[in-house]
Image 1 (cartoon, rainbow, N blue to C red):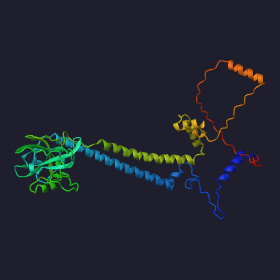
Image 2 (image 1 turned 135 degrees about the horizontal axis):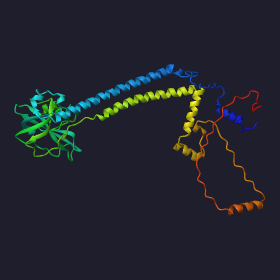
Image 3 (image 1 turned 90 degrees about the horizontal axis):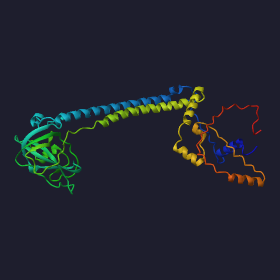
Image 4 (image 1 turned 90 degrees about the vertical axis):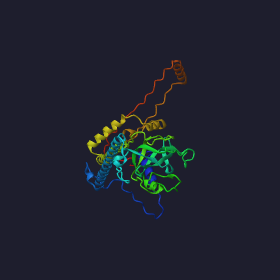
Length: 392
């Protein structure tokens, strides 16, 4: 038998696959290449196995977690919407007396955020403070806090605005002074901030609007520690204009919460989609020999054959000169016979033929079009036991 026969090729491949072992070494056994859990099952029987029950339970738990997170984002969106409504109402409300919303020094209701209050008093210019590293327009600067002493002796902290840091980020470029004497102020309520940072205190600077710390800086006394005011209007005006902290009603973002709510629902659906894809793949593998599944597979191959070539396939065709039949779901090879050699007569006849060809006018080259040939493999027939093999 010729060494180039298919049987000889298989023997050579088998000889290459044999693992070289040292004398006395144990023979390595081949591991199973099939699934011992679902092998032999038909239809959807594999869904009842322990493995797939765990997969389905995991997908359900994952979906429940996604629904919980989606509902959480929905609640946050509702809270932001209510906050925006409350802020818009308070921001455009008429100013009220300070003691009507802050009956005690440490009182504050979050529903009164940005509500305007009208107060009259005298600024304590020497006790003015600067809050470091605060946004001021398009740069970073200092917010100017000036205590306002009211007629009853209580002190209300007023944030008069911000000022740029200038060339030295540790120092404000100027220390604007408020008007002296009695002033009438309309300020919007804000809750005090928590303590921040451990930087050693500079003479008239603080890290945050911590009203308890400001009270200590002022030496105690009757200081409002529940809330402070962001300046809206002031009479008389200051000699040095400061950048206002707010010019319109602040709003909290709501779109991001609605977006996350929808995304968590889609993620839950993606989880079920992945579970269905795995179940469908397992069903096709176990039922590959069923006539109905073979018919569906044939239709899928025909549908895939109508798709356009991908960039990778075009590149392979340019490099190799052909595309494998597996592109259409066909296993097999095609042998292309070489072109038949051209026959010539006598030398003289050949010369005359060449001359005749040369005298003919050249034809315009036809544009070449790619041609796709789909070869449908025939059904394999069982080998006849009476037929002798090639080895015989």
